[in-house]
Length: 119
Image (cartoon, rainbow, N blue to C red; front, top):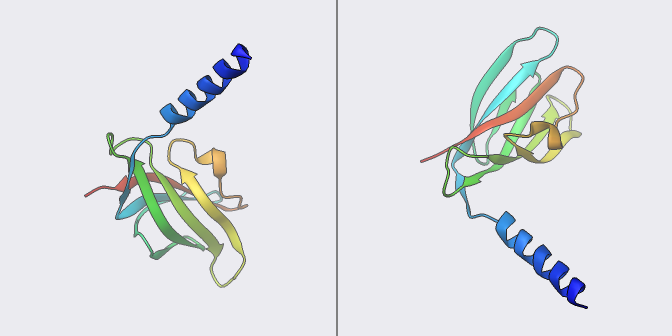
């Protein structure tokens, strides 16, 4: 009984510590890579806008960053699809420091978050 209570307390404390206060930036800095030519492209996208990164259209839903560390770990909600096609290649949150955690899967192009734009 005591072990179960301690385990529950530990899980609760860990979850509370893992949550941190975040703020939304007005946009994000994204980087694109053409894996064939090796060319990279940095692009600034505002929330709610769509930008073209090589042969992909990238829509930014939101970009969030830790309130106490604006240069810290940004994460952005991206929707990505090939130009002229309706099927989404990626739809979800991408983390700047761990883009492979939830990554775009495309044979030629790669897109990842660099940072949020901060006011």
